[in-house]
Image 1 (tube, rainbow, N blue to C red):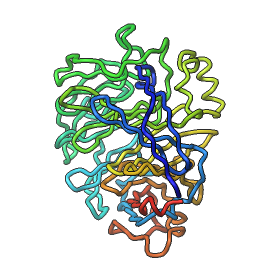
Image 2: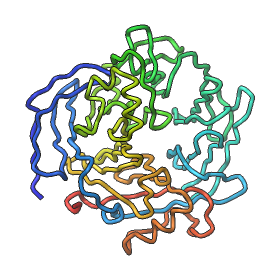
Image 3: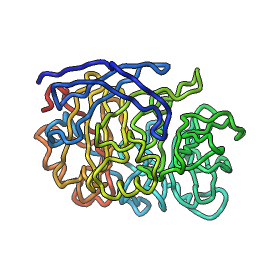
Length: 397
């Protein structure tokens, strides 16, 4: 298929609710390839022009390999769904969202321990808002009690850090605390998306300013900060630009932008400056009001919501080619099959227990294997993890 790539010929940028807005002049002779366009805001940035209504291909047709990770089923294992996942000193750490426990498994899927830290004391958390790894400890944000609790890999309490700042999400990194204030006003008229504090909780600076009379609240997941190599990424779901933390300049640099054209509502000032109109538009489902990008070194997995369902697009960062995806059982269109993070060129998904067999049965012969010691799908009661690699983008439709 012929692909056309053109660089930006016109650029107009300014900070707004959506961060850096781009006015593009691009052309493309195919609906299957994004147009990577380069500009500079302290580093080069790519713009992927995506047709959200492009032709759909079943995800199982472009899977290179699929590895299923089943967790050991014990009386201490309770994972009807998984929202948080990471690799911690070679082991697997997972948890649900809300009321539940953090679980630590070895690389074969055997339960090492269930943290059982939910409780009323200062050393426990009331609910799992989210967690992240901070050096050798796991940090748990307890939004109810407005604090971060730290635990080691033995589930032992290390310390607690009270949080006085209003925040939608947060992340600690290199002795700094990053607060997501994108859905609330901060510091009077100087509204910003991110506030940075030092380890003593002293204000350092605010970043990514926006203009809006009243914040428009929406969310995709509890935390808009994610680890990325040796740094972190940030993307408000109302912002089409992904930002990468620059430790040298102490700034968030634009990494890439997803251009969904007329379907993306926040390019139009009449919507983001009028909360009532924006809410009406969100309720109609006609326009895309939020997106979520799961970013790897070579790929981006884009999800957005429109007309009451989730839509998924895989983007090859190396050449801009993209493919809209569907799945059997419709699991990509709901919350039962969700991408969590890239590990190399493998995208780790969580899949609910009752959907596993149907997904595996639809895979091409020779493309499936088990990553865990447990290989019995029929008796599995927990959500599982799937490591998926994809065929070279030249083999996509």
